[in-house]
Image 1 (tube, rainbow, N blue to C red):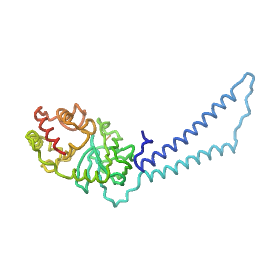
Image 2: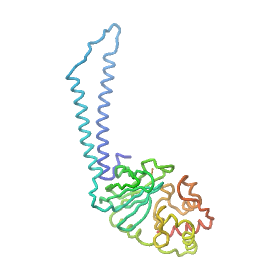
Image 3: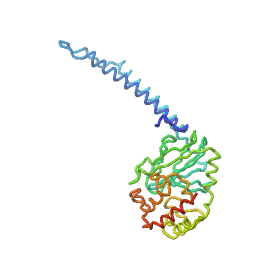
Image 4: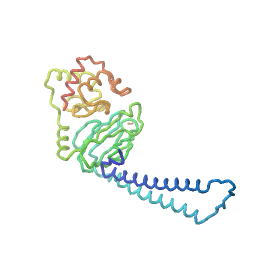
Length: 308
Ligand code: CUA
């Protein structure tokens, strides 16, 4: 649980600030609670007691309880500004972003401009390297949030924001949209996969390749269906005529771990469920029900599973 599992230098800075402020606040709460309890008991009303001496206009006391909080807040402000610089290093304006993430209702497109790769809902980065992300939105305001890795960053239509991301250890880091963006805001999940340099290079190489044409008859029929039904109006598959950018790029869809912005794990059965009735899986999402027959769904699934 954050702040105890910070996975990057940036989130470690945020975690340390959080813990330091929490400790300061806890100590103050303790002092105030003990003092109030002590005063309430020690000076409680007893039979026959008279009003104690009143203490107003005490200048030394008033200065003390003004100066101590002032110093405490100045200290917190100092560490906050230092943390902001560490947690969100400024963009120099010259570096080209390696990864462009665009928020959509309700999924993420992930593009690697230099490598010419398009994918969705899953970001791969090399471990231990500082990677510049550009964040955009295709429709409404979203918020890009990988809690253990980096600060939250809003995605604003018409704007581009930049975020340096760096992860210490290989692994999968869960993320989510952190700004209410419509019916399926809760199902706008993101996976960051941090890999060693060689593994990452291999992933890049594989994602940049055009998938081989299907060999089985069923998958070939699916490929035909894909091109002739309305799939091509929204989706792209490299090496085919499909190049629309409305929905997720499907060039290597079979290599991804989840479907539909994280609602389903990516299995042939779940893919069939999704194709049969997208609204039943994720109500309100923008993928239409194509009224596919059972054998058509089988053919499309066979084809999409070849997209490795
Ligand atoms: Cu996108 Cu909430």
